[in-house]
Length: 291
Image (cartoon, rainbow, N blue to C red):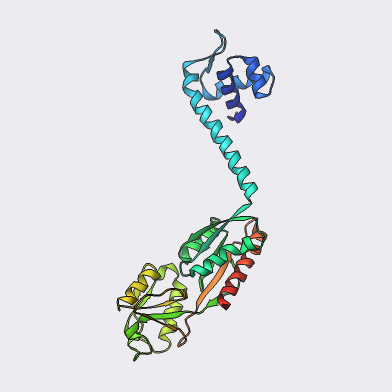
């Protein structure tokens, strides 16, 4: 036998009504099924809940267990209400974004399904590409915008979208001022966050005969601080990233675009909805890249 919600309802109704007929009426059943339900509950719990010799009164064990039954019923009610809210509000889109995605692009991507009429609530997570791939494969994310290239491990992906980038360097050492900025290390995020994308970036710099030194930073804000301090250069796709004493030039020799791609798990039961939403996200990315 399994403990059911009806067992708990019978227990609470009898404890509060102290009468089999009134309790049966409250639960919405007749008295015989109510008595049977009580006997089954007592068998499941291994205790006697009520003393029938003096009307219907709780035993000591029943008094101890009643608060637990009340909390269990309240939790079940809360669960049903939460499910009803989820259904009324539409489904939740769990979206992952790599930290390199510029703020304006992130905003456009998150807004795209809503603007297209999708009744979805958006939950946004920012994490390194490797983490986003793992979370998407595990079903904890519906979609993710990752850096390309990356090993997809069976995930579906749309086309690669390229975003132009800028080189930020100390104002008195920018590439146009005698090229001294090229001797400064390049501030980069840890390689293990996106190994393939990191290696492509470094290899592209090295292909032009440049001596490449890197300096690991936690994020672009930290990188910008080092640039302002004259200790590094930074390549960014965020056109709003700026500071006093920092020079900005377009990365054209060589081009160092930020490559972004949308991934999802096409093996999931709701893969058609996910694929449609992914297309909306890709279109938003493409529009932002064209600006």
